[in-house]
Image (cartoon, rainbow, N blue to C red; front, top):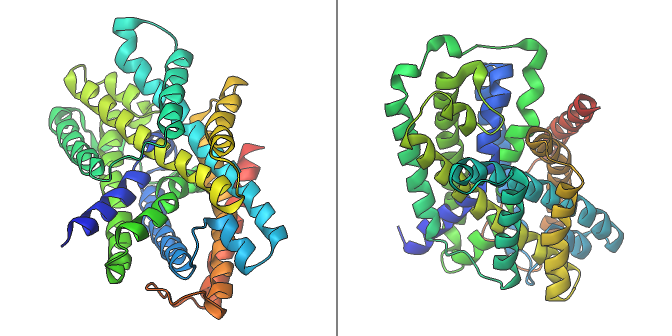
Length: 377
């Protein structure tokens, strides 16, 4: 197992394990654990397929492109513009979620010592990440190993210190009225498409291992997150907070919560940087914008939405996952048929995508979009 392979797996895990992890316990407390398992397993499998399809599209194309550029190359320039809108809205929704959650974590960590509002901490996080992307500072893939170690240590510590607080009565099997409430949040949480081009780059000399790296990165992330969510639910139950860790702090009054907040902040920052840089690449690679303009559109515009009051974490990730994620998923599925018909070069990842499966997934994503929009309205 090479260093590049481990870095590829860690990079994908770093992109997946982010803010969605901390929003799900609150939603799961309203739906029950059965829908949690169903959606986590089913949507992790769906995202795994989308990750593979994106990898195939990237590897079959000679130039650097993200989804809008691929649509423009293999489909139409008009479609490219529509997909840009979808991808930008998705990136902005993700970035907004990171600003909201990161501000909450920073506030809980530093407010007892420095004071200040959540708004100030969210703004500080935005400025820090914007500086990283402005100077094009790439996160070292190896840092994802540290992040994963933090995750394992956090789960272990919370389980150990909170063992006496875990109660089976906190686990509700199912609330049929809220059965589909988790769909958008989980779909958002298990997605790591922004990291797929980097995974392919890291394994440029070991292309035969890309599929395996994507499998490990996707399913190991989903498993670790499911364990984390079940631990939080067992401790906090109906008292689960919107960001998970605040509710945990009401039960565990010691350093475990501080450790968890540090982990949460690191998970948010790494995913935030990956998402912001991916959005910047869309503007640069696919629309040939200047580096500075691409940075401004990718990094600064989402903060404007935070300024005007878009600060509901659960609704943000649910909408982003179900609606923009669903549309992008449908586009990618049908785009791959076009790419398979006339690839620019042979792809090391060659997925067996049948029309019945494509129709099934498209219908699933459409139903998810309809439900999410109806639920918000």
